[in-house]
Amino acid sequence: MSLRIDSPTNPRIAAAARAAREGAVVVLEGSRTLVDALEAGLVPDVVFAAADLTPADALAVDRAGRAGAEIVEVSGRVLARLSDLESTRALVALAPVPSSSLAALAGARLVLLLDGLQDPANVGAILRAAEAFGAGGVVLTPGTASPFSPKALRASAGSALRVPVVKNVLSTDAVKWVRATGATLAGADAHGGREPDVLRGVAPLVLAIGSEGHGLSAPIVEGLDLRVRIPLSPRVESLNAAVATGILLYALSPKTSAEKR
Image 1: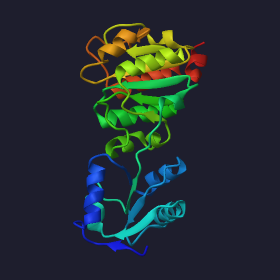
Image 2: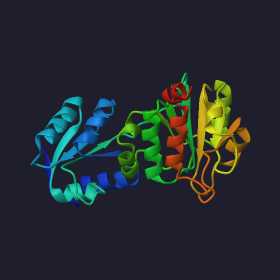
Image 3: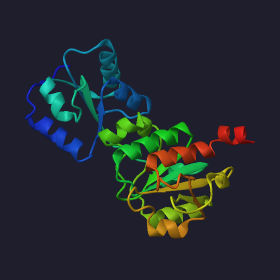
Image 4: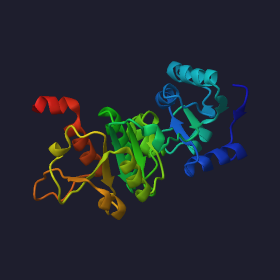
C-alpha cells in the first residue's frame, strides 16, 4: 500500500463517505464480506485498510488487489467515517452497485417480486431466504429498500451479492413482464387467499410480497393469478414480511413437497 490517508476530512474520504451514504456504491465491511463479493464476481474499486491487519484480513486485501482493486492504507478514524458500525472493521471496500435485467431472469422457475418494502433488514433477510430456497432472482419496484445498503447487505449474509436483483421496475411493467414470460403471478395476502399448497409445482412462478404497511400496490393486485395466505392464530394479524416470505419459500421447496407426499 503506497498511499496512506490519515484524516477523515480528506476530500477523497469525504467523497467516499458521501457516495456510501447516498447508495452510489456498495460498502463492503470486513474481510468476509469482501471475499463474498470477490467470489460473486464483484470487484471493489478501492479497499481502505488499516495498517495492522489480521492474516485473514491481509489475505482478503491481497486478493482484492490482485483482482484490480486499489488498496489505500488509512487510519482508524477514516475507517470509522466510512463505516456505519459502532465497532469499525479493519477494512472497508467500495464497489460498484450490481445491476441485472429482467432478461437475465429468463428461464427462472421462481422469482420474487418485492413491491415497496421499505425496511432494509427485511429486504436483506428475504434475499437470504431467496438464495436458500433456490429462487432465480428478485425484482424490486420503486420505493423498495436497496439490498445493497450496509444494513440490508448484512441481513442478507452476502446473498444480495449472489442472487440476481433487478431494481426500479414499475409495478405495471412487472406485470407485463410476468405475462410475457407465461409465469403465474401469486401474491401474499394476510387476509385472504388459499393456503401455500396451491402453489406447489407451479412453474414458472413469480411470488409478490407487498410492503409492511400497505401491502401490494394496485397494479400488482389487479394482475394476480393467485392469492396465498399463511394460516395464523386469530390473535396475530400478520407476519413480518421476511418471516412470511421464508415460510412461503419453505412450503414451495421441492424437498418439503416430497416429504409431504
